[in-house]
Length: 347
Image (cartoon, rainbow, N blue to C red; front, side, top):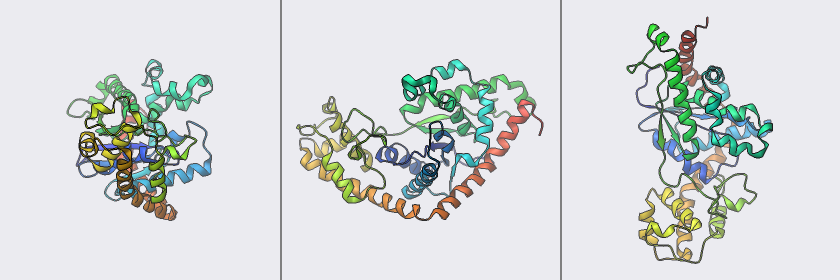
C-alpha cells in the first residue's frame, strides 16, 4: 500500500489510569500529527505483558487507551487505531529481528536496567527484549517517523540499527528481488519526531519525580477521567514554593514545582513558557493556580467526559480496534511477505 503522506507509527501501553503526562506527552501529539501524516496508532498490549498483568484489567485498559485516543480527537476512520495483538506480523517480524539484533546492543538499553532494578535475574526475557518488538512495530509498516520522548530515543536508535543491519546483511538479495527503495534499502530508517514543551510532566506533589500512575498518592497526578471538581482540588493542593513566579525562564532553575506548573500551563495553552511568564511573572501562586485550574478544566474535562461515555460502549471500541487491525494487516502483510522472500522462506 503506497504512502500518500509520511507515515507515523506510535504506541501506548495499556497500563491503566492515563494521566496528564500521557495526554501532553503523547496523545495530544497524536492528534496534531493527523493533518500532515498517515498515522498508525497502536495500543501495545503485547508490550504490556512483559510484566505481570491481570487479564481482566488488561482488557479494560486496552479499551481505556483506545477511548482516550478517540476522546482527544484521533479520527479512527481517517487513520488507524488498533491493538497490537490483533496483528500477528508484530511477533513474527520481532523473531526475525531477534536474529538480527546483537546482545551487546540490548545490553546497552538503559530502560531495562531501570525497570528491572536489582532483581534483573528474575525479570522476564520479554522485558529485556521488548526494544526488538518495538523495532518490529515500527518497521512492519515502513514508518517514516516516530513521535518519541526522551526515554524512548535510545530504542528508536536501536530500531534504526536493526533496519540498517538487515539492509546491509541482505542487500544483494534485496536488490536481486527488486525490493530496494531509491536509496537501496528495504527498511527505511525512521526519524524521531521530538515533541514540544512539557513532554515530561512531573508529579504535583514532587516536581523532581515524573508524574506516574504508580504513585500511591492520587493527588500527585491529574487522571484523564477526573471531573472538573477533582482537577481543581488537585491543582489547589499541588506543591509550590513561597516565591512569586519569575519574569524569565532562567528564574525557574532550582524551582521544580514552579517549573512543572508553568510547563503544564504552557503545554495546555499552546504557548511558550516565556509567554506564560510574561503574563504571570511577579505574581504568586494564589493568582496562577486559579488560572491554571480554569485552563486545565477547559481542556481536560471534555476529554474525560468523552472517555467515560466511550468506555460505556464496549461494542463500538471493539469495532474500532477490529477495523483498525484489518487495515493495519493490509499494510503489514505484504511487507512481511517480502521479508520472508528476502530470507528465503517458502510460502
